Image 1 (cartoon, rainbow, N blue to C red):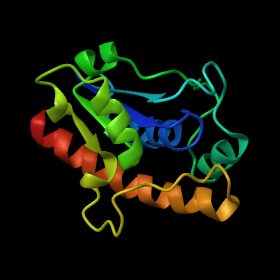
Image 2 (image 1 turned 135 degrees about the horizontal axis):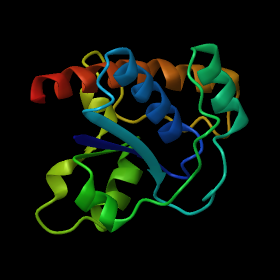
Image 3 (image 1 turned 135 degrees about the vertical axis):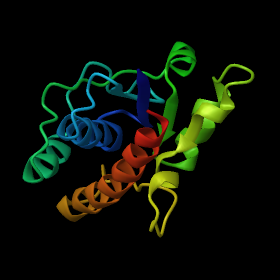
Amino acid sequence: MIRVLFVCLGNICRSPTAEGIFRQLVEDQNLSERIEADSAGTHAYHVGEPPDARAQAAAARRGVDLSVLRGRLATRQDIEEFDYILAMDRGNLDALLSITPSGMDHKVKLLMEFAPNARAQDVPDPYYGGTAGFDQVIDMLEEAAQGLLEELRRRL
C-alpha cells in the first residue's frame, strides 16, 4: 500500500480538495486497494471542520465530493507512516520539515513537483478570494494529481 498525505495550512481548502481529486483518480483506475490518500493541515485552525463550502462547491462542479472529509492536524507520526507528504506551498513545506524525523525528509515534497507543465511551485490559498481562485486551484491540483498517479503507477 502506498500512502499519500496532502497538506495545506488549515486543511479546509487546498489539501482536502487535492485528496478528493486524487482519490477519484485512484478509484477510476481501480487502484484503491493499493493507494491510500488523506489530508491534513500544518495548523489546528479547523480541526474537525468540513472543507470550506466554496471548495466543496468547486470540487462538486468537477464531480468530486468532499463532504465527508474533516480537517485535522499533520503530525510527526504522519510523516513516519505516509510514503508521500505533499505540501501545497513552501510555507507548509517548511512547517512539515520542522516536524520531520531525521532521515525522512525525502518523503516531504511540494505537490506541484508532480505537475509537468506547472508555471508555479506553490498552490495559492484561495481562502480569502472568490470563486475563480478555487477553480484555479482545482486546475492546478488536477494536473499535479495526474502526474502523481503516473509516478505511483510506475512504483506499483
